[in-house]
Image (tube, rainbow, N blue to C red; front, top):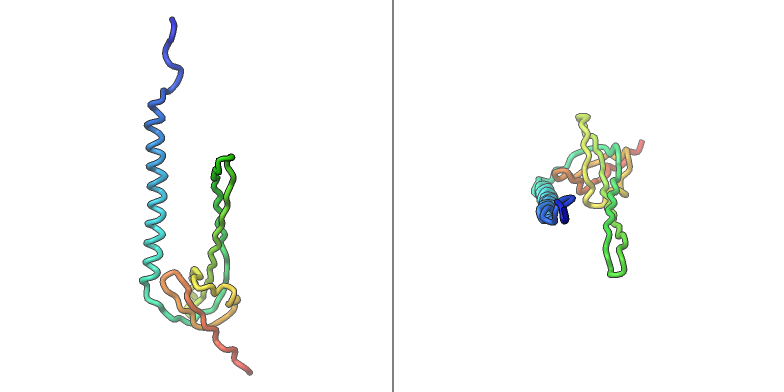
Length: 135
């Protein structure tokens, strides 16, 4: 028997799987954009409060991303990174909360500092250190 049955999926399956894969990736990207926008506007619309607090911890989170780009002569990796800074405050009632530093306060405060923190949603936007009491 010449030209028997085909030995695997035909080209039709690629026309089914690839569009589904592209749609899933597109939905993930759009979902991420929407989620980040919602978080941003939630914080931006939150009222700014001034609270007395003590800085108890600082941390940074580094995220790396590598993608491959072609330039006609082959592909080469392109890397980027993003660093987010967080400051954890403790309030008079013992409650602790971590805030995203959106105003570059990370290098200006140290653990143990006490004073008035301006917070807006999940952001810390200002910190006014209390003057040390002289004895």
